[in-house]
Image 1 (cartoon, protein in one colour):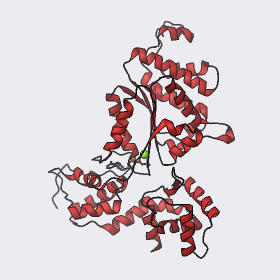
Image 2 (spheres, helix red, strand yellow):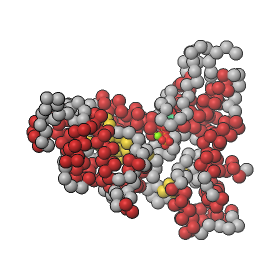
Image 3 (cartoon, protein in one colour):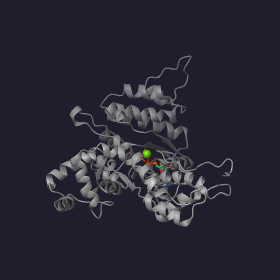
Image 4 (cartoon, protein in one colour):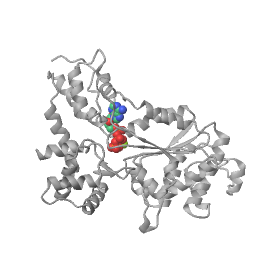
Length: 398
Ligand SMILES: Nc1ncnc2c1ncn2[C@@H]1O[C@H](COP(=O)(O)OP(=O)(O)OP(=O)(O)O)[C@@H](O)[C@H]1O
Ligand SMILES: [Mg+2]
């Protein structure tokens, strides 16, 4: 078998790996660019969607757009530990910000204000990590007051020393944010309070929070005004033409040894349901298989591999009774979209010897939500939190 030298399998199934061709998402990108045009920040952004739908790689493409439009960009992945306490989230923000501000000089007024005395070693104060942290430590009051104060000082200096439009605080995996009433720590509320207050004062610090569908309800639960503070973009499966482009564009080049015909492309779109991670996963397999001479998509093999690599781990964590409930849901006509407690209860009466009552169903849905298998959407209905989970469950029972 002759293969062209230098052309490798281009497909990239994996968390946060840029795809060979990023398909679709033009509308979301335009929305983001619109938000960049705000003088006063009235809208922040929540980018949300199921696992593997392409949130992280899309945000990665937002960053250069923001930079080109004279915004500074700071942030990381939010871990659960960084949202354990108010102090931790404050330090997280300042740490991230300091990367962008460390070379910005602090004007004399502020220097005097914070009692800075030039010594022979440090004649000039910059907004590096040490400065931000000492400002934070020296400011009296609650964590929120301290953080607000430091961020205000930073913007005064930035406005003077740079030509930036503002700063974007971008946090991925933001569903890890939570308030902890038991330990009296409210980091989510703090984050929202601080940004709302700064934005009211005209300081252009924008929040971009990225995460699973549990993210936005969490924000609203912490502060109802979050409802008005964020533009929510729900990333969905790719449209058909975009799915096709995601499959064909990467292998268009004249030196690509693999061709995938229209039928096979349609088949891949079908199995993937248009979900980006699945497209990458399936195409990677198909590419390797076609490279050694196969000409049709090995649907069964790929499905089996997807089941064991992607679904099995999550399924294994469910109890028998939970699996029964998930099985009922999978049999609902609308299991791929959204469903209600009543619908589950009604169908379980038809399918099961021991059906689920409403309160039991509610209870179990809460547990399944915490386990990351379902989520409750804005309209109080539920949906699978894992793409194509319904189809997988149906395969288990046959
Ligand atoms: N628009 C797209 N076109 C083609 N492939 C894409 C697209 N978006 C994402 N992918 C691919 O899908 C996979 C998942 O992308 P990504 O990690 O960004 O998803 P995610 O939504 O951040 O997932 P998670 O919820 O697990 O963090 C990657 O392999 C990526 O290359
Ligand atoms: Mg991600």
